[in-house]
Length: 265
Ligand SMILES: Cc1cc2nc3c(=O)[nH]c(=O)nc-3n(C[C@H](O)[C@H](O)[C@H](O)COP(=O)(O)OP(=O)(O)OC[C@H]3O[C@@H](n4cnc5c(N)ncnc54)[C@H](O)[C@@H]3O)c2cc1C
Ligand code: FES
Image 1 (cartoon, rainbow, N blue to C red):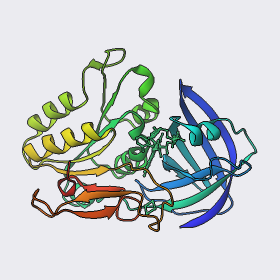
Image 2: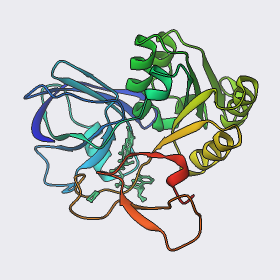
Image 3: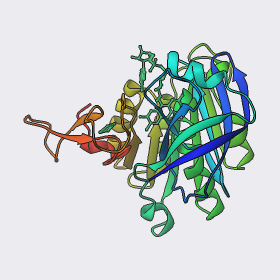
C-alpha cells in the first residue's frame, strides 16, 4: 500500500449520479484485479474520511474508477476537475483466485450488479487476454445503471444484459440468465465471480452452490481506514457450518474477495 498523489486526467459523468475518473499517480503501482483504493479530494477539508473505490483499470501510472454518488464524499469527488489533486491510498485488498479457470480450464462466469462492475472489469479483461472462456452477466435497475457496459462488450466475450424495468436487455434480475447458463454448462463446469448488491450476491452464491460451481464475491462495506486499523468493515464468516458462533473478518485486508460459502448471508 502506498500513499500517493493523483492528478485528475478526466472526471466525466456517464449517467445520472455515475462518474468515471482517471488519475495519474505520483508513482506507478502494481494492481491486481479486485483491488481497491481509498480516495479523497486533496484540497477540501470535508469529507475527512476517504471513500473506497474498486480499481476499474490500471495502466502505467494511471488508475481509473467508476463511481455512483450516494453522499457527501463522492459528491465532492464528482466536482473536481482536470489537473486537480486527489489523495490516493492504493493498492488495497486481495485478488480473485483464478487457478480453476487458468489451470483447470473451467469457464469464468462474471456477474456484475450495477456499480459492482468496476470490481470485475480488470478480472474479465485479464481472463479474456489469457484465452479463458469468459462470459459476463450484467444487471442494473435501469439502462442508466450499467456503468462501463460498453467496455465489457469491447472485450469480445458474450455479455448478457438485464434490467429490472426492461429498459435494456432482458427484463428481470441478472440471476435468471445466470441460473440458465449454469444449468446448461453442467455441474462443476464454472467458476462464478460476483460483485453487486448484497441480495444479488446472496442469490448468486445460492445458485452457484446448486450447480457445484466455485463462487467468489467481492464485498463492499463501510470503511474508515481501508488498511486494517479501525475494524469498521468486518463481516461475519463461517467455516463450513452456518451455526453460530461466527467469526469476523475485515473486508479491507482479508477481502474484499471472499469465497461465497464463507459468508454468513
Ligand atoms: C472495496 C470497495 C470497493 C468499492 N467500489 C466501488 C466502486 O467501484 N464504485 C462505487 O460507486 N462505489 C464503490 N464502493 C462503495 C463506495 O465506497 C460507497 O458507496 C461510498 O463510500 C459512498 O460514499 P458517498 O460519499 O457517496 O456516500 P456517504 O456520504 O458515505 O454515504 C451516503 C449514504 O450511502 C450509504 N452508503 C455508503 N457506503 C455504502 C456502501 N458501501 N454500501 C451501501 N450503502 C452505502 C450510507 O449509509 C449513506 O446512507 C466500494 C466499497 C468498497 C468497500
Ligand atoms: S476499514 Fe478500517 S479495518 Fe477495514
